[in-house]
Length: 344
Length: 268
Ligand SMILES: Nc1ncnc2c1ncn2[C@@H]1O[C@H](COP(=O)(O)OP(=O)(O)OP(=O)(O)O)[C@@H](O)[C@H]1O
Ligand SMILES: [Mg+2]
Image (cartoon, rainbow over all chains, first blue to last red; front, side, top):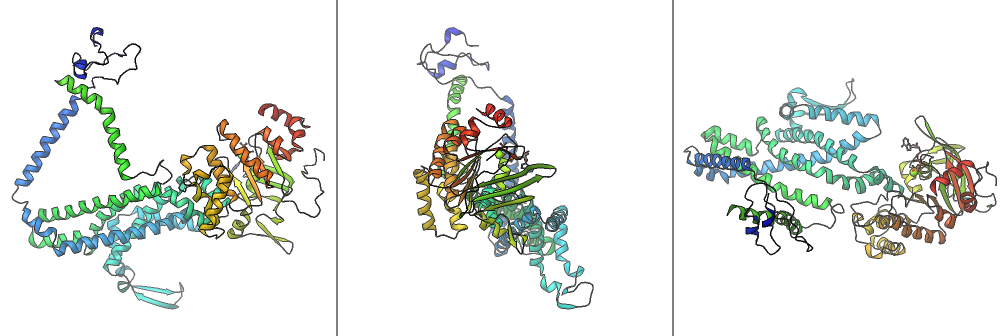
């Protein structure tokens, strides 16, 4: 405890004010009689554990990076060579295409399944539940292989009257579903099941009074969903859908199992020939990291777009950064000053 | 009029059908019968104030008028049309969603908790139904919306989101939103009971102005002063029945029924 004799007056310098109390003991209240109290100048609680942990992590991290960089197998020239090879770029484009296409299928299909699931019609609701049950409950890898080999399971698709020999039309399945379509089907249908549950949670998060107000204005159920409920549900839907998109981007690499032309397939093809496994994996990792980083931009934009009306003034990126830095700077300034004082 | 016959308006209106007509309306939720035969009629331009203890079925009755709830027995007519049904060859046919939506356009509703669309500005809230439901042009709807916002004293709040408005301001936007569909009757379900006391006056002023302009209104309220001053008829409900109905000064100052008296002594 600071002896009361050393209580600083308002004009006392920060450094001298905190010097006597270099122990972690909290100081008593110091209010200069009458005048408005100055900002609190307390010695912050010490966290020796944090320091030890930080040093440990730094040492380990530097060690790991050093050993990777010094490893002759790293072969940075190969990484550089393959980073922008047509083989890699083609794979990246296919990966992007697969991600976008299956997410579009997943989101729009998911909205339909979610609405079916919430429908008062028991047939629709149960059908949606079964769909979600099957496609969420089995591994994606299994579904990929299944769609890849669907031709073996159902050689012909026939449109006719069931349990009779009447056929209106028939296709050979493997013509109808080539490998890329199979991959898309697997990823898209799987995503639909997850998206449906996310959308359902979003729809249910919207206050019931909102649809009542819309109905009382004469809006049809469909219009109410589209104009009133879904735009509000988006706030709840977008963050997990951002996660889903990142997961999807990485899941497309599973397509390699059923022969795709995506990034991972192409990289794997290359390293099975030249055995430069680690450098090529690093190439793939760089691309996946780059793509997932870029994805956060549209997510931020969407979150702003659908956050309108919920977050006070319409936030701009600039104002958001300003509030964040303010929030960091203001409370720490005095404590940093006093820490400096204590350490000197 | 006697207390035992829950007939609100004297059967004087010959030429004009009542604006809202309810006959022996019953409504149950599962085993709970909430409305046990409500009969009342509201003339064009009349202001009816509905009072009663919590759970007496006031909100449910209003929601039935708007077909937000389906009634189990009886009949409700708005502007001469049966709510939720079409009478054909002496039989009732349920209306399609679209037809129900069309019927609701004649009835404006204001909720206790405002229920403004939070993702739209005040102006966007008001033009939503005119543009999306009535198919009016955006410019047209905006001009009307600005007029309505001015009418409720919020001309300067057109571009403000609901979250940035006070409760009283939100409720006035909600009134403007309901008026934008040019309804023939307005339903108010405790429009001021979620408001801070100092904000109640602004909303009641808007409602008073609306009543003076000749709007037919059914108002669930516990504002006894408003009911006495603005109401043409006061209806006291309890346990799903109309206990007493008549001139507001009589019903609210010198009620005939013991139940009304007991309720009023608690509210005042
Ligand atoms: N959707 C519903 N399902 C089941 N019960 C309901 C439903 N809506 C209302 N009720 C019940 O009906 C009864 C009447 O409710 P209502 O909301 O009409 O009362 P109220 O007179 O408006 O009361 P308050 O003054 O509290 O608003 C209550 O007992 C309520 O629990
Ligand atoms: Mg109520």
